Figure: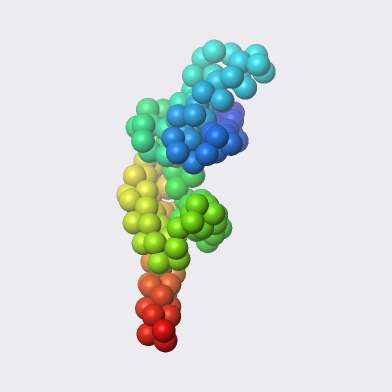
Length: 148
Protein backbone atom coordinates (compact mmCIF):
# COMPACT_ATOMS: atom_id res chain seq x y z
CA UNK A 1 0.00 0.00 0.00
CA UNK A 2 2.87 2.41 0.76
CA UNK A 3 4.28 1.92 -2.75
CA UNK A 4 0.89 2.80 -4.27
CA UNK A 5 0.52 5.85 -2.02
CA UNK A 6 4.00 7.12 -2.85
CA UNK A 7 3.45 6.44 -6.57
CA UNK A 8 0.14 8.28 -6.46
CA UNK A 9 1.68 11.28 -4.71
CA UNK A 10 4.59 11.46 -7.15
CA UNK A 11 3.04 10.32 -10.45
CA UNK A 12 2.67 13.84 -11.90
CA UNK A 13 5.80 15.41 -10.38
CA UNK A 14 7.25 15.68 -13.91
CA UNK A 15 4.62 18.29 -14.80
CA UNK A 16 6.84 20.91 -13.16
CA UNK A 17 8.96 20.59 -16.33
CA UNK A 18 5.94 20.61 -18.69
CA UNK A 19 3.46 18.06 -19.99
CA UNK A 20 5.66 16.50 -22.67
CA UNK A 21 7.13 13.21 -21.45
CA UNK A 22 6.21 14.12 -17.87
CA UNK A 23 6.08 10.43 -16.96
CA UNK A 24 9.73 9.87 -17.90
CA UNK A 25 10.86 13.21 -16.47
CA UNK A 26 8.81 12.52 -13.34
CA UNK A 27 10.51 9.16 -12.82
CA UNK A 28 13.90 10.90 -12.74
CA UNK A 29 12.66 13.57 -10.32
CA UNK A 30 10.95 10.98 -8.10
CA UNK A 31 14.16 8.93 -7.94
CA UNK A 32 16.13 11.99 -6.73
CA UNK A 33 13.49 12.87 -4.13
CA UNK A 34 13.28 9.32 -2.80
CA UNK A 35 17.07 8.97 -2.59
CA UNK A 36 17.29 12.20 -0.59
CA UNK A 37 14.64 10.79 1.74
CA UNK A 38 16.78 7.66 2.11
CA UNK A 39 14.05 5.30 0.92
CA UNK A 40 15.23 1.71 0.38
CA UNK A 41 16.49 1.11 -3.19
CA UNK A 42 14.01 -1.74 -3.69
CA UNK A 43 11.11 0.58 -2.82
CA UNK A 44 12.54 3.41 -4.93
CA UNK A 45 12.49 1.16 -8.00
CA UNK A 46 8.87 0.16 -7.36
CA UNK A 47 7.72 3.76 -6.82
CA UNK A 48 9.66 5.06 -9.82
CA UNK A 49 8.02 2.36 -11.94
CA UNK A 50 4.60 3.61 -10.80
CA UNK A 51 5.55 7.10 -11.98
CA UNK A 52 7.02 6.05 -15.32
CA UNK A 53 4.09 3.71 -16.13
CA UNK A 54 1.16 5.91 -15.06
CA UNK A 55 0.54 7.39 -18.54
CA UNK A 56 0.57 3.99 -20.24
CA UNK A 57 3.57 4.73 -22.46
CA UNK A 58 5.51 2.11 -20.51
CA UNK A 59 3.57 -1.07 -19.62
CA UNK A 60 2.94 -1.48 -15.89
CA UNK A 61 4.74 -4.58 -14.64
CA UNK A 62 3.66 -4.55 -11.00
CA UNK A 63 0.27 -4.50 -9.31
CA UNK A 64 1.22 -1.20 -7.66
CA UNK A 65 1.98 0.45 -11.01
CA UNK A 66 -1.24 -0.97 -12.46
CA UNK A 67 -3.25 0.52 -9.59
CA UNK A 68 -1.61 3.96 -9.94
CA UNK A 69 -2.17 3.86 -13.71
CA UNK A 70 -5.83 2.87 -13.35
CA UNK A 71 -6.44 5.50 -10.66
CA UNK A 72 -4.95 8.17 -12.92
CA UNK A 73 -7.21 7.15 -15.81
CA UNK A 74 -10.28 7.06 -13.55
CA UNK A 75 -9.43 10.56 -12.33
CA UNK A 76 -9.08 11.81 -15.93
CA UNK A 77 -12.43 10.32 -16.93
CA UNK A 78 -14.30 12.13 -14.17
CA UNK A 79 -15.60 15.71 -14.37
CA UNK A 80 -12.65 17.25 -12.51
CA UNK A 81 -10.21 15.41 -14.75
CA UNK A 82 -11.96 16.75 -17.85
CA UNK A 83 -11.82 20.27 -16.40
CA UNK A 84 -8.11 19.98 -15.58
CA UNK A 85 -7.28 18.59 -19.00
CA UNK A 86 -9.34 21.30 -20.70
CA UNK A 87 -7.54 23.97 -18.68
CA UNK A 88 -4.16 22.52 -19.62
CA UNK A 89 -4.99 22.47 -23.33
CA UNK A 90 -6.59 25.91 -23.28
CA UNK A 91 -3.43 27.34 -21.70
CA UNK A 92 -1.49 25.87 -24.61
CA UNK A 93 -3.73 27.85 -27.01
CA UNK A 94 -5.88 24.94 -28.20
CA UNK A 95 -9.36 25.98 -29.41
CA UNK A 96 -12.59 24.68 -27.88
CA UNK A 97 -13.34 22.64 -30.99
CA UNK A 98 -9.89 21.05 -30.93
CA UNK A 99 -10.08 20.44 -27.17
CA UNK A 100 -13.34 18.57 -27.59
CA UNK A 101 -11.89 16.29 -30.24
CA UNK A 102 -8.53 15.77 -28.49
CA UNK A 103 -10.10 15.00 -25.11
CA UNK A 104 -12.74 12.65 -26.46
CA UNK A 105 -10.14 10.61 -28.36
CA UNK A 106 -7.58 10.70 -25.54
CA UNK A 107 -10.02 9.65 -22.82
CA UNK A 108 -11.49 6.88 -24.96
CA UNK A 109 -8.00 5.57 -25.68
CA UNK A 110 -6.99 5.72 -22.00
CA UNK A 111 -10.24 4.02 -20.90
CA UNK A 112 -9.22 1.02 -22.98
CA UNK A 113 -5.84 0.65 -21.24
CA UNK A 114 -7.12 -0.30 -17.81
CA UNK A 115 -5.37 -3.16 -16.04
CA UNK A 116 -7.56 -4.09 -13.08
CA UNK A 117 -11.08 -5.50 -13.06
CA UNK A 118 -12.28 -2.77 -10.68
CA UNK A 119 -10.55 -0.10 -12.76
CA UNK A 120 -12.24 -1.33 -15.93
CA UNK A 121 -15.65 -1.30 -14.26
CA UNK A 122 -15.21 2.23 -12.89
CA UNK A 123 -13.82 3.52 -16.18
CA UNK A 124 -16.83 2.19 -18.08
CA UNK A 125 -19.23 3.95 -15.70
CA UNK A 126 -17.35 7.25 -15.91
CA UNK A 127 -16.98 6.99 -19.68
CA UNK A 128 -20.77 6.88 -20.05
CA UNK A 129 -21.02 10.31 -18.44
CA UNK A 130 -18.09 11.62 -20.47
CA UNK A 131 -19.69 10.41 -23.69
CA UNK A 132 -22.86 12.36 -22.91
CA UNK A 133 -20.80 15.44 -22.07
CA UNK A 134 -18.81 15.33 -25.31
CA UNK A 135 -21.91 14.73 -27.41
CA UNK A 136 -23.53 17.81 -25.86
CA UNK A 137 -20.35 19.83 -26.35
CA UNK A 138 -20.21 18.89 -30.04
CA UNK A 139 -23.84 20.00 -30.47
CA UNK A 140 -23.12 23.34 -28.80
CA UNK A 141 -20.07 23.92 -31.00
CA UNK A 142 -22.17 23.22 -34.12
CA UNK A 143 -24.88 25.63 -32.89
CA UNK A 144 -22.27 28.33 -32.42
CA UNK A 145 -21.33 28.09 -36.10
CA UNK A 146 -24.98 28.13 -37.21
CA UNK A 147 -25.44 31.53 -35.56
CA UNK A 148 -22.38 33.12 -37.22
